[in-house]
Image: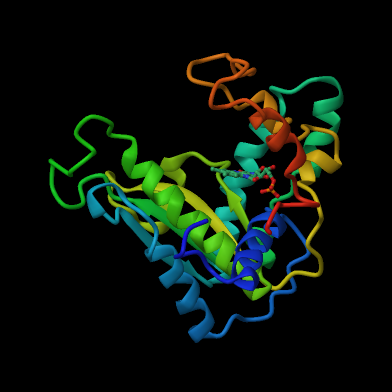
Length: 244
Ligand SMILES: Cc1cc2nc3c(=O)[nH]c(=O)nc-3n(C[C@H](O)[C@H](O)[C@H](O)COP(=O)(O)O)c2cc1C
């Protein structure tokens, strides 16, 4: 046990935010978020890890009904063209994937990535240029968890063609819009992902995803350092996150 660990209540709160976070697509009440709270959420996002401390993000706060309608239109266009890829049951389930949040949420935030931020040689990004995207994803996750703790729903919409978003939001060509984030009070937080509820996909058993020492080894060597780990993974779950 680390002497630096949080109190039991604080640790439970962290896990609670993680487990009770949801991607919320509908049921936004539209009530405004006060500026102090929204600023707190944006600070949480801005305190994410970033490669070479690059901080590649910007947050475009969008309130205008007209602009939100334009965003809805381009997302709907993309959603309809994506729908034809799916067949059978998935084609029938596809309309359950809602985008009304773009119209109904209290605020829409376009999160962008500027790959040129801090110049051409960002520490850590030299060997993997996607690390700017990983960094901005950390920022969105911070926002998501902080929003959940504040009682706000949040939905990440990425069904769009980037040139459409660049046009509507007047982004320079090199700026990458990675998400339209819908945010605000909602009528309910489902217990499980909507895609799970509609039968699109299930959460995979974690023990199938943990390998030991090299790829595709889901069972550790008997007597080795990982003996008992698969059982520990299986027994520690949402109902019992194992916080002593
Ligand atoms: C990078 C990213 C992009 C996403 N884009 C969309 C999207 O365009 N439309 C959508 O319905 N959900 C989108 N989602 C939400 C996922 O469908 C959702 O996170 C997943 O089903 C698990 O549900 P949960 O977030 O409630 O746990 C996105 C999530 C991530 C992380």
